[in-house]
Length: 497
Ligand SMILES: [Zn+2]
Image 1 (cartoon, rainbow, N blue to C red):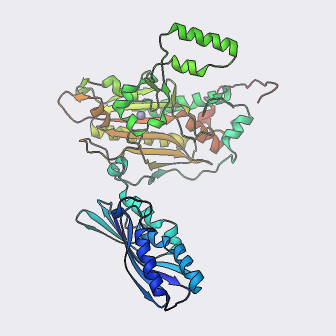
Image 2: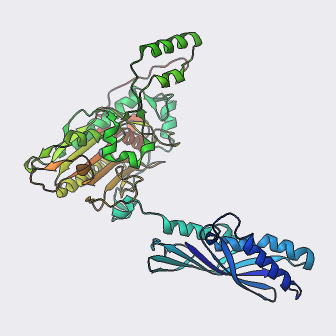
Image 3: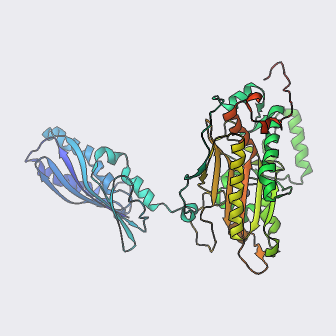
């Protein structure tokens, strides 16, 4: 990477005597000031030309990647003031960059719309970026480096394949008047519908909340899942690491899961553990660590993992397609770095997961249907919603582009959201192309093309969105929900809620 800058250092005055001093200064700067910070001379900056005109020093700087020319010009300011101030009573007023050019090997030309970019040109595998005129404050804000960062960033796999713009809204409901303007989490705590659990992002859901969750679950199954012919299975939730590897989830989001270890067979160690616990009255955590095997499982983060494993290395005849399963058998888990707070962002949640295998056309059609029926249900519940093109589908999340002979759909993910103080995604509808078919070696008998898809209906999310809009008064709720709620009671403790 190379940089070239033409700039002006504007002084507060001029003096014929100072030319010699400047000469020495620049010669010296090229040897010390502008090479400080790199051992490699070609990565440093160099003043290649300069000229004093009245009170302006016109200057050209070339540089490599380490001491960039646009930073180098700033480096001159203070030492120059220290030189000219005491002797000539002249200060440095301003620094202006009139031309700034970056030459970036294999840079991404899609940066031409960024601020400060004047022109972009590709020449012999190099990207040549010319910047608009820059003043000192812009230089100090590192705007050049930010543009360069965008030009050198490798595209993520998602960006590479997604044809539509993430965030583009493809459908939305009519406006609805909210019946509640509080914070659903705080209100639920106050009423004793939930209680904070010590683990991160976990809640204890008491009878009224549980009843609401079950009402939504049955409603979703009746209105979305069953009409589309999905059949229920019970999917395991403790998922061996090898499956996450085949899903390529470990490359994409390894920091987003809970890992589990089984204990070692070591009765002596566990005896010691028990004894220490009894005597010291605290958990001997180091002994426990010693007693555990290496992590070999995760707690299911996506809920559809077992489906692909179920079909792994199997051969299916197209006459049996599509295969449509769903699971609602319990909690799934996600580690949210730093981001767990209310009921809307939790580490442990209830979801109905539909997952299917079929021809590419069918797989897309089924995905679209799951979204449509969810939207219809939300309308019946008088909820305000919108559906948008999702950004990172879970199976590609965080991964960089790779050359693999996979088929991907034009739109890998739709997300339907309910409006509220915080909008929440209640439906995530994905088409994976051949991503899992390839990873798990699933084959059609005639080698016809087959794809997979999955849609998650976040039950706890639906409840959160519903409460944000409809509030906590049973009388205000739509019949569809009321009919499914059985009377519940929260026990009053002396100290809670
Ligand atoms: Zn899924």
